[in-house]
Image 1 (cartoon, rainbow, N blue to C red):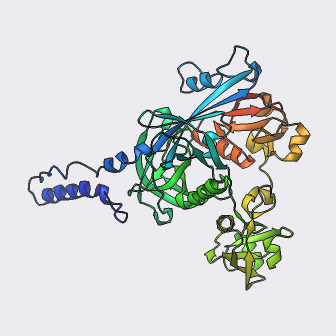
Image 2 (tube, rainbow, N blue to C red):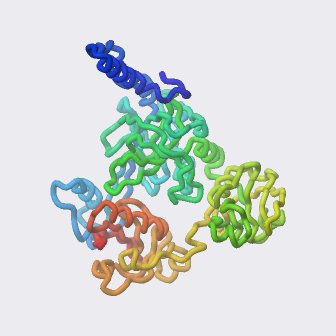
Image 3 (cartoon, rainbow, N blue to C red):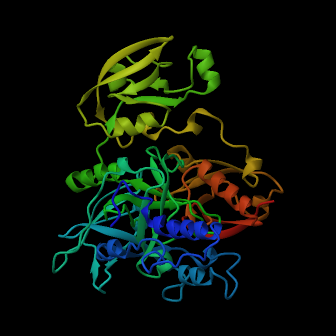
Length: 495
């Protein structure tokens, strides 16, 4: 088995054979005959995979959606197309009345405790009426309890009741992973069953605007639909990531996949196990990035740190004396290179801990001691849910198919009488004669998904549209909900 410090070994033998053959030809002799061990190709990872597959599970969920025949898609998928089965399953009606329909989905997960604890993504099980865990030996167990879930990191912890101890895997240290290290993904892509793919770490600490604590590992190991919630292993067989998202115009792997690093996942999972919820640290500041222009205006030598835009009253930051326009550059000994570094550092800090904060105020270095509080789940003005768009105007409507979009706030819910169960991005204005207007999209409609990916913010919609345009497709598929929660698919031209 390759050791952690020797990730390049899988291709060493093949490279050695080529060099030997080339040298013989240059010297005028016959090519050297490769020994059997040299001709096999890269080192096999079969031993590693064989010991892990039993702990990786398939997760199938069922959810009943209420609706009416009018909520069916305007443009059903053509017979024989890749989406035919998706549409047939999604719009399969119960009772022949079209009043409800069952939606089935598949994902992945992995066992972390022999007694029956399973980790997966929150989006895999969100809203499910029934969750079944399928094991490689054919055993099927019903989830007896969702011990906890966290939308911000997209993690969930499930409980099953096995008749015998399960095969479990352990977490490794994601902080030791370097770009170029070999990793293995095991999951359930496209519902095919357990599949193994191998690749390398392409990047660390990736921010893809999926949430306030983005710190993803990026890998080129193939991760496809159905791999969500599955483990990403190092070559020691330790889980160093939870596969969560991909960038792909087509929905298939193009070698850009993302996993929640194990060091972040372990903290969340431990809290879900102990409390049934997350208990994150809280500072009580609203922050933004320090751009070059802002750095010049503040007299800073370089654009780094988190600029405090607002301090919440009665917060730990206010009590410590932190003020707006301060630039936080260190928190509890950790460098704060940009705005998004601060929420991650604060959230991971134990509640009640006194930490040192170093900041710049009017060009002077100052030090404070802050006692970290607990993040209120409904806190709207604090660092953990802060977004760039709160401090900048929304994208222009013409960039979004003639739509003016906004986050779905309580005020907008009341204005358009939208139920609490509906989540997505609300349409507040439709430009006349635009592609959206021609498809009868109206103010008050809620965009739930774009190209079968859930969206929560206007920036999510814009990112999906840009991906569609880049792929060369002429239309984008939207899943819309009206104020009553009835769903419909609409294909809107992109150009």
